[in-house]
Length: 172
Image (cartoon, rainbow, N blue to C red; front, side, top):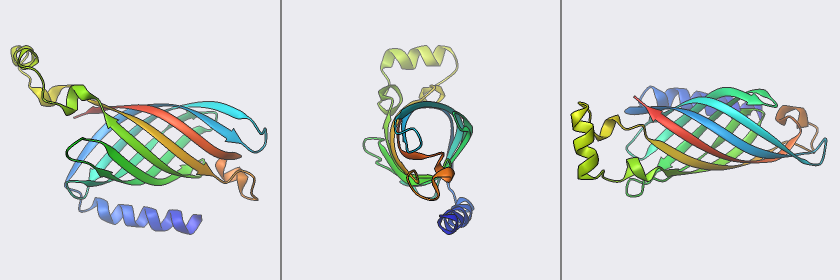
């Protein structure tokens, strides 16, 4: 797991040097974790700061860092792909703490992914703004697998699996 994390971090860092564009966001998560120590479902929440660094029009690296309950802190690094027609995303990677591998599916807020109405354009123009100034968001669902029920279960906070629902708010 250490080697895989190290290789992923090195690859991500070199890819970031060639990033074309980035999106920064704040994210709130609510999730459920199935744990090996209690053999029960434990709720959790997290508040994250993240950035997507695009290496092409469709591909990006996703980095997140934040505070969480019950683990106090969390960090994720992943690689993602964006469907340019629908705005939907698919990413996979490693949650460094608590250690998990994950896959996440993103659904953009229709308010930002679709063309805005003429009425909205006029309202924004009165404020000296345009569509790009809207506070855009994205809903995400992630499924994660941890190291619970193994000798290394302390690395994943005894978690076997996590399911999360989150919302991201993008800003300039």
